[in-house]
Each structure stands twice: as structure tokens, then as C-alpha cells.
Image (cartoon, rainbow, N blue to C red; front, side, top):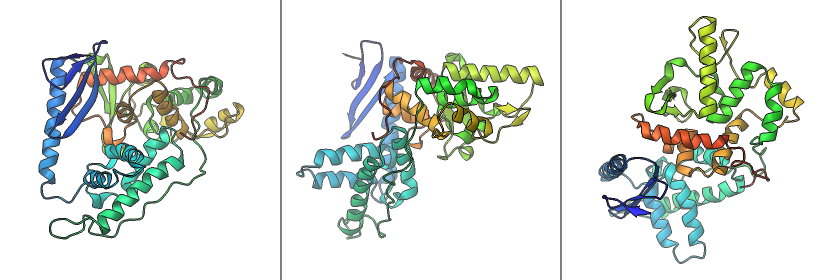
Length: 363
């Protein structure tokens, strides 16, 4: 790893760049991939500016969850479990770290829980992290005071609902199961199911995908689809990254539309009409014939997430590709970012690199 002209930016042997800088006591660490030095410097400047803006907004605000977590870690530093507590807080911060403590409750924790489920983490492990949240909220309401003597959390701590310990487990498809299932599906469903496996989109987003959301990225040699916040579960504008298989399906659908009448509102149609759900008779009959009755449509999203993880894609990039609010691609994205994410998404196409002997159920 070599240093560059800018302190805090280093160049790896493969040509990728890393930001590793401490700014006003806060570490900024990002793997940028193969971007130019100018792009890396701009990203670092953007990260510093975002933190400065956040600090400015916080001047007269109530404590953030990150503030409370830091105090909790300080008070727990001599405990045997200090390292484990630090781990739980580290995985929480990307999701709720910048929230005021009064904004942390069941609804704002949904995204964290969904991300952990998609990573194959067991309900028991998720609950251990939620117990840390409970403890921090209780201390903020009952023990910690500001200079005026007011509790850090001015209301009673909310109830944090734990995960059911024995829910129906996720079932990410193996390559062998995928090969058995696909030929049994109707042709229009084959494309939709394969698109789900290679994009991680939910059922409603694939069925409702519109051509008007397509945005060409000439530098990447393909398009992205930007799903508006009102149509996406986490209320953000989600940029759908298309790996090689997903892009091939989009081109197939485009050719189909051009052959039929040259116009259509939705990307995926059947007999000229929108498909309401992939969970229809064609899907249910095919999975029964393949002996995969326990596989749900949402497991296709689990399949994409699992293969990203098995391919070694970093958590921050997985969050962006999966459309989690905490790490969504900004509206004013850079083509270099899109190109890098396409490369990462293509890793799920490597059968050998994403193969595992054990199904990940309990983390």
C-alpha cells in the first residue's frame, strides 16, 4: 500500500484507493475501488463536509444515538463484555448512529433487522444487539443528564420488540436449486425471477419497474433504474445497479416491447399487462415440481444478499446494492461509483466464488 499526495488516501497494489483518515477525532474509512486520485480527494472532501454539516446541525440538538453509545462504551470499558458491546454498537451505527436518541424505536430499527436477516444472521444474534439498544435507551432516560439536569431521553424508553427465536428460516437458493427451478417457470417469470436474483429487488419493485425510471450511464455502457422514494420501502430514491445478467434481461425486455408495439409503461409484462406479483400459480407450481415448496419470493432477495457476502463484497457496498437507507447511492451519483458497483454486483455471477457447502441459517 502506497501513500499519495493527499494524507489519508492510499493506493493499493491493484490500483484501488482507500481513505483512512482521522478528522477531528472521528475516523473516516472507505474502500473506493479503482478511482482516480482526483475522485478520491473529492470523496474525502465530501465526507469531511458532511461531518461538518452534521456537527453544525447538532449544536442545539438532543444527543444522538452515537453520543449515547459512546458514553455507554466508556462506562463499560472495564467489563469483560466490553469488546462484544463495541461490536454490537459498530454494526448499529450505520443505521441509527446519526439519529437523535428520541427517534430510536421499533420502526427505525426495521432496516437494521432486515439487513441482518439478509446477511443470514439468526434471530438470537439480532436480539443480542437489540438488547444493547434497550440498555442504552434506558440509561439515556434514567441515568444520564445534560448540564441543565435534563435526561438525555426526555420520555420513557420505548419498547423494543425482539425477534421471534424460531421463525421460518431464510432459504437462499443454491446454484443447483436455481438450475432445477428456472426451466419449470413460464418464460416471462424466468426473466423476472432471474432479475430478482441479480438485483435484490423486492417483488413489488420488480412488478412495478417502469421504463420512465431508466437513466443511461454512458461511461458504464448501460443504464440504471432510479426507483422514486414513494415507490421504495425505505422511502429513498433507490438506484438499481444492473450486473451483466440483469442488464441482459433489460435488453431482452426492451426488444420484446419494440417487437410488439414499441411502447410500454412497465418493464415486465404478460400479455401486454403488468404482472401484479411473481408469487402466482406459475411460481408456486414450478417450485413444487422442483421440491422447493419452502422457497418464498423474498428468498430471491436473500439469494442476492448471500451471494454478495460469499463473494467478499464489503458490508457498505452490500448495503448500497441492496438499497438500505443507511448506505443508499446518492441522487447525484458519480459514474465511477456506478461502474465500481456494477463490478461488485457481477461477483454474484461467479458460481465458484459464491458456492458454499453449508446453507447459512443461524449466522
